[in-house]
Amino acid sequence: MNITRTINFTLNGEPVTAQIATHQNLVEVLHERGLTGARESCAQGLCGCCTVLVNGAAVSGCLYLAAFADGAEVRTIEHSENGELDAVQAAFIETGAFQCGYCTPGMVLMTRQLLDAHAEPSEDEIKHYLSGNLCRCAAYPEIIKAVKLAAAKRKIERKGAK
Image (cartoon, rainbow, N blue to C red):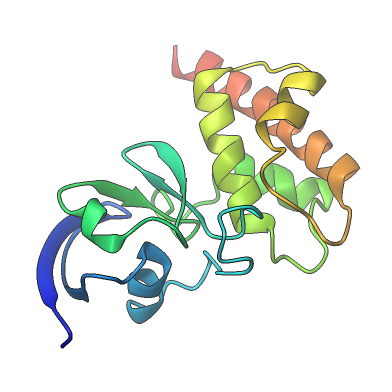
């Protein structure tokens, strides 16, 4: 017997209704909607490839039941403001902070959450914060550079907004 239910949530700023099986995880529901940035890799919540933001908090989409997203705001790597790259995305591109790109969506989302909480993190804070996201290509030095650059870009944006 396959039990289903209807959930409603905001996905990248747009209201969404989805019919889900009660056992489905959030990554599966996102993939059904054509959003494949979050990837299920380890299926244990250990690698960070499936990271999405739910109500502003990073979660492992492979472990997060889609039913829990009912009424929530979900943001994925595909989210953009007016089709523009944000400071974090731009910094990752400028520093070449990716190779295969598999970990990049999770790294970008974790960086956004980090910079929302700590506008100017130290290198140790960056390393600690991103420690749950694994990069198989070992682009860690470039990723740290990207986070620092994103923090600097956001600082300039904040000054320009005043």
